[in-house]
Structure formats: C-alpha cells, structure tokens
Image 1 (cartoon, rainbow, N blue to C red):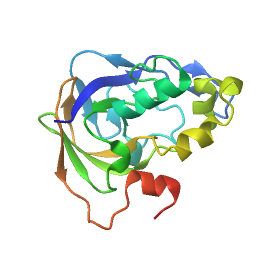
Image 2: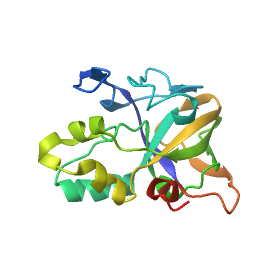
Image 3: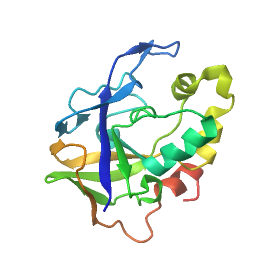
Length: 184
C-alpha cells in the first residue's frame, strides 16, 4: 500500500542570487502530525509564490523510487526534503499520476494532482550549481520531477499514513510526466 515516508517543511530560508533574494527549497523531515491547509503544510513557506506555491501548487510530492534513482546518479545521499518536496512517498509514482486524480492521504486529507514540478535555476543552484551543469534539463528529461497537488480537504498528515487514489481522472487526462514532457 502506498504511504508517506516523510513529511517535510521549510528548515530555513537561504540566501539566493535569484530575483527574490531567498529560497525556501531547504525542506527537512519533521515528526508528528502536520496540519494541511488550503496553501499547503503548516510551517512551510514558498519564497517565490509567482512560480511556487499557491492553491494549485500547495503540496509537492516526490517518490522514493525517483529519489533512489538520483542518489545513484549523483553518488550521494538525498534525504527527504532534498528535492524541496513536502511529502516523500513509497509505492506510488507521482509522475504517472493523471492530472485531476484525487488522493486520500491519511484519515482526512484529500489532494488533487495539478501537474508537474518545473525545475528551475534555484533548484539547479541547490543541487550544486557548476558541479551539476545542465541539471534542470537532465532532471526534466528524466521525467522524474514529482507532482504538485491542490488541497481539496484539509486535515493532518504524518509518516506512515496511507495514500489511496480515491478518484481517478478521466482516462484521457494527461499524466504528470506527459504534461512535463509536452506529450499532451
């Protein structure tokens, strides 16, 4: 059964040479239940709400299989939160989710898949800047970017909560990967 391996919120705002001047990509796993509201997880922050956050990008979910892939590729440990994700999940591929699909997370949270995470220059700098040349393209082209979701029903989430696809999107709805790679 798919489940949450980690719940992550911003650890610290970091200086960043981008237009906002700071980034909230430094997410870390926390213990205990975390409230989920209209704009995402309590105690989380999005520094650049023009491109990250808001109702349609309230929760960012990343799969453990994808994290394991990148750990092998990069030759380093990639703990929960390293991708800037709010939820690290196992047993579910967020990239294969269809836009509009709804997930029940734990007892009372319902999330709806809205689309892919679009990798950006801030993420490239976080990963290693010059040490990982071409990171944004490499990450995108692999189709392992994770999914953004909107909050349909508020509540709390915690490690170990099951993730159940509660309602499927229409069969012709594109997957997160298809939207990312321009297939639909």
